Amino acid sequence: MIKKWIKKFNEKLHKANEDDRGSAFVMVVIGVMATAIIGATVLSLATNYFVSVVVDQQGTDNYYETEAIVAEIRSGIEEVAGVSNEVAYMETLDSYNAASGELQDVYSKLYLSGIIYGIKNRNNFTKDTRHISITHIKKIQRLILH
Image (cartoon, rainbow, N blue to C red; front, side, top):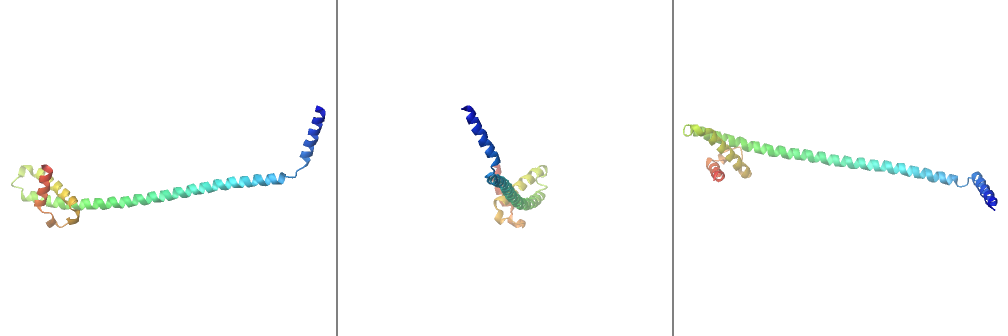
């Protein structure tokens, strides 16, 4: 009985080796799968590259916009500091004989008070030194010191 089964198994195996009906279908399925895998890989790589380019472009735009904003702020502060320096220097020269020992202290207080005034009152602050009176600076100085 076992010999009969082995004989039938060998016949079926030999018949299957000679019969190639379906091998073309299997080869087409394998080819389509390989093409689909390669296509999905290329699509994934292209999508990742596109996303990274967009993110890099946005980062670059943000960097340059921030750089421009910082330059504007720096320019405004330099303007305020320049006017403040001019007013503090002129006031220090006016009181040169009166307080010769503490000129540096007087200048630094007037200069910093002028900067604070200029930053707080940015809309009214121009290069024209008439807008910054020493009374305004002294009011600010009194507020800071007391």
